[in-house]
Image 1 (tube, rainbow, N blue to C red):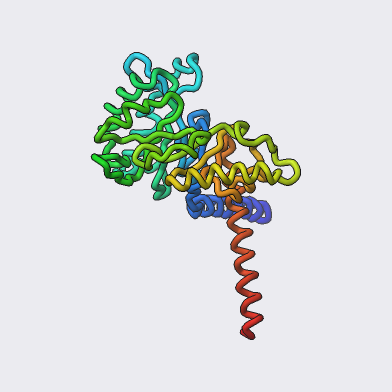
Image 2 (tube, rainbow, N blue to C red; image 1 turned 135 degrees about the vertical axis):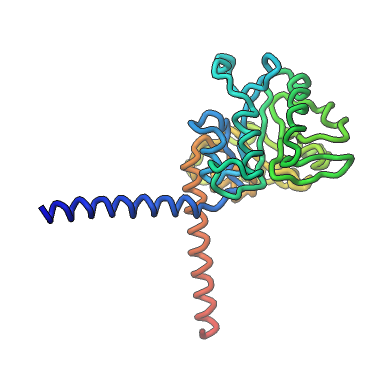
Length: 291
C-alpha cells in the first residue's frame, strides 16, 4: 500500500514539475520581431496564438459589410460575424491599458497588417473612423510627422493610395508593392513595408543551394526597400527552414508563415546556434590571448 502511495505521489510530483517547467519556458520566450503571422485569424485563437509564440506582426483580412469590418478570407465566413475590433483592436487596447491578462508578454511594437478585400475607399473610410477610438496605442502621421505607437496599422490588398496621401492626420500606413520599390521615393510617411508574392521574384523551393542569380535579385530589391526605410516581406514563400534561413541571409525583414510553432522553433534554434558560435569565438580569442 505504501509503495503504491509513493508511486502515485511521485507521478503527481513529476507531472507538476513538467507543467511548471513548460510554463516557465513559455514565460521566458523572447519576442520575434521578424516573424509574421500570415492570415492570423485562421488560427484557433486569433491574435493570442501569434503573441503567445512571440510574433510581433500579424495579418487580418477584412470586408466592409452592413457597416461593419468583418474579418474573413472568403464571403461564406461572414456567418461567423467576427469583427476587426473584437478580434484585434479591443484586445490590444485592453492589454496596453492593463485590462487584458490573456496577453502575457510586454510585446511591442506590434504591426497589424490589414488586407482590405472590399472596396478600398469605402472600407478605409469606415476603418479610419474606428481607428480614432484606438489612437492612444496607434502609430500616426500628423502633418508631416510620423509618431511611433505601440501598434502600427499597415494596409494591403485594395489600398486607398490617394486618400492616404491626402490626409494630414491618420492612423494607418500602406504596404507597398515590392516590385515597384526601385522607382518609388515616397518616405515612410506613407509606406512602412514592401511586399510581394515569393514566386514573383524567386522559384527556389529550398532544395539545394539558392541560385546566385536569384539571391542577387532578391538582395537588390531588399536594398532598394531599405533605402526608403521599408521592411520587406515575401508572402506565399515555401514553408521550410532552408528558405527561411536564405531569406534572413538576404536581409529580408519579415518571415511570412502559417506555421507559428515551426517558425518559433526555427528562430529559437538559430539564436542558440549564434550564441554557441559567439561563445566559441570568445573561447578561441581567450586562448590566443593566453587567458
